[in-house]
Every structure is written in C-alpha cells, then in structure tokens.
Image 1 (spheres, helix red, strand yellow):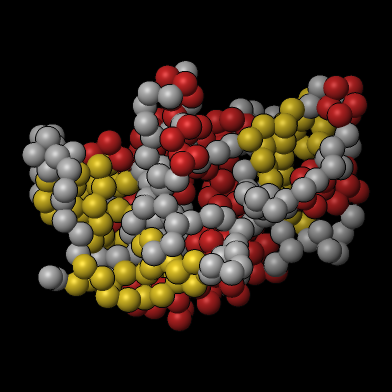
Image 2 (cartoon, one colour):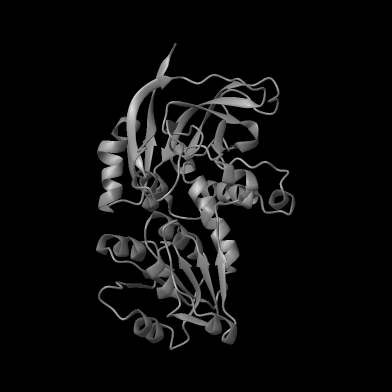
Length: 350
C-alpha cells in the first residue's frame, strides 16, 4: 500500500498532553459515498497544536493533526456530484451534524456533535499530511486564482470574522486586544479595516508588539512595564475600552480586562485554555451594563466571508504569513518558532 508522510499525535497515557511524531502512514481511501480525497496543498500551524502537546486541549490518540488545511481534489465519492478533480478547496474542520438543537437554531458552531470529538486535525485525521479524506459537507470550493498558502488562512480568519461580528465593532469604539499572537493579530488586521477611534494591543513580547504596530495598532502596551488601567485611561481620556477581545484566554487576562472596560463595554472571550480560572465582579457588570460574550470557532457564513476577504486582499496576508516550510520541518522548525514566539502564521506544505 502507498505511504505518505504525516504528523501523528501520540497521547501520554500517564500524563496530559503527548508527542507529535512525523512518520509514514498509509494514504487514506474513500470508504463513504459523500467523501472526498484531497491532496493537501498547505496547512497552518495553530496554537492549539502546541496546547494539545502540553495538555491544554484534548485530542485523540494516533490522530493526524493540522486543522487549518486546504487542498485540491483527487477523487470523489459516488454521491459527490458538484465538484471535480483539480478543484481548489478549503476545509471547515469542525464537522457539524445539522440536526441538533443548536444547529437548527442557527448556531452550528455550537453543535452538540462537536462535543463528542469530530474536528478534523484534532479528533479525526487532518492536514499535516500529504493526503486527507473529508466529507463533502466540510468543503468550500475556492476561486481558481487564489494562492493556496494564502487560502490556508481561511479557517483562522473565519474565527476572527466570527469574533468581529460578535463584538459589533463601531467606528467610535476604543478597542483593546489582549494578546498579539497569530490570532490576536489576525483579529487586529480585520478590525483595522474600520476607521477606529483607538486600536490598542496589550502584549508582553517585544517582537509581537512591533508586529502589532506594523499591522496598524495605534498603541501597544507591555503589561509588565506599565500600569494597564492608567495607560488605557490616558489613551481613551478616561473613557475605557468599549470592546476588549481577550485573545489569550487565561484567568489573569480575563481579570485584566475587568480593570479597563468602559461603561457599556463588551468583553469578548476568544482565547481558550481549559485550565483557566478567574474571578468576576457581577455588580460592576450590572451597574455599568457591561457584557461578557464568548466567541467560539466559526460558522459557514464566516467561512464564506473569510474566502471573500482573502480573495479580495482586504488584509495584508504577506505580513501575517511569516514562514512557509515543508511538512518535514514541522517539528524541527515550525514548533520551535512557535515556542520562541518569533513568528505569526507558519504554513506547512507537504
């Protein structure tokens, strides 16, 4: 049987997390009529991949990771009639059932089926491989002229679109984004398309703060060297932040947000860590009519919007993609750069 290179997660049975190993495995074959075999053209590395190894996010043992992937169609199941070999496609890795209550109420990103573990590249085999099998329902056809390394940003950008829409950004808003990691900067790039009053980034790392400035931040703050509340009061003339997006997801960043929000402010919790615990002051939410909202992955409309944003070059993709590496350097170079925080989006190619 023909083999391919893939990055496979091996769970630590005694502790949380585990190891990702590059190894040869069998090229998958279509077994269901609605399945499609794709040749993976590009797959982005996500912070979630690191969290899986560190025990901060669950994943199934012996699963090929990589959930930000795009490719070209090689073979089609018998029930797939609207696509053809050679078509460029993007994958929504979060397979929804379409029939549970959240799906039928218009919230497919909250599908109850997801809780059982269906995400490609986390619970089912994904895109850190040369080939992958996906169902037709997870596929979005792409324009022929799109660059596939750019297209690998569609999945993370769709999550940023979802967050942006929940935030209900207004041009008069003072906006603070906590965390200038890859997702924080993708969100920044999207929000920067608005002529905002103030766009402020809070980030510990010098390199990432510089990237935030390059991508359009009006102000950057190092929380270790500054009094966050005093700085935000000075920048906003003591109005505070109308929108705060926590792109980190730790207890301390959640509590940081509660120090700086405006009357009527909106805190959008975007970053995830299932170990995070934080305190909250309910009376201040009531008294100043503040909102705390979660933003979880994306839905089909967000994917369509992300495709249009990338196709029409509405954000600077070249600044967001800092490295393009072969798949065989995923661990030796890709994860190393991620841990050193000297990168934004890293795209792997088989």
